[in-house]
Length: 367
Image 1 (cartoon, one colour):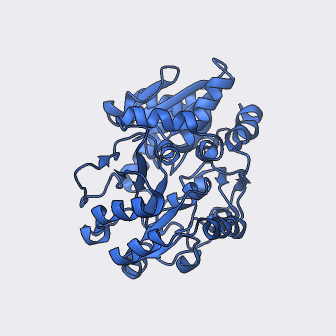
Image 2 (image 1 turned 30 degrees about the horizontal axis):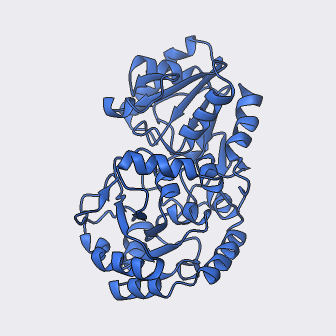
């Protein structure tokens, strides 16, 4: 429900209805205009690559630093500026990976699509009372996510859902050798090193105990089991206050695209983040370090929509257990469990063509 101030803004913004909707104009909102990444990024890049100049692509930003990542072919507007409201309210297609701005009175002839930004393993406790039914469509990564989008105690979405997978994951399914080399060069890491990506989920409570991995022991365990010299990439949530680093590790918190980091990484360590699903599409090892699962479920996120203990990834609750699951890792058993996991969750995207399917479904038919 809108506040009184928001209601007034919503009424005033109707003035933009005097401008006609432009059929080839597309607006992209990514994490509330704070990033150039995720599904919106891959959709807009595919459009420009395959239909150069045919569509007007619009991106929005909150800080000038973020604006520098937006490519030259896209029109840029600062959030809440005149051009922000003008292009947003005159676009035939509006694509967002989270929500829509509450104060913007979109028109029925505009098509609003939510790509979301992961699998809905944890659902959405919707503490901000978002109305996802402002969207006309959602796209789902898998059947589990499709069902969670429908749940009344989560998204409660009543519109149409397209079962096509997330465009951002296409690069994880296709050969990513060139991307891997680019990431190594961008980060200044020698090609002969091995990378472990540490990407824990956000904690509302600033308790660094959730991130108390013995990273020196971790590097030793990885070398003993998989060989080579390991470098840790630290990818904490951008809102996380308490963080734990070690000398020699690389802070990739500001790197604009985690999908590229996943292509470059050999192993992922996380806890409850849906990034585990994305990484599993490459069948590379995922290890879970979950020291606070009960508190996380009880105090922050609520019940998972798939039993945590049934995930195919080896789970540890302390450093000794983490060392053990790494050194005893069975790659053949792991691959079989991941295949079963994909089957249970109802994986859609096997060929890496989710972006093309999105464009054929929405861009070619609507714009």
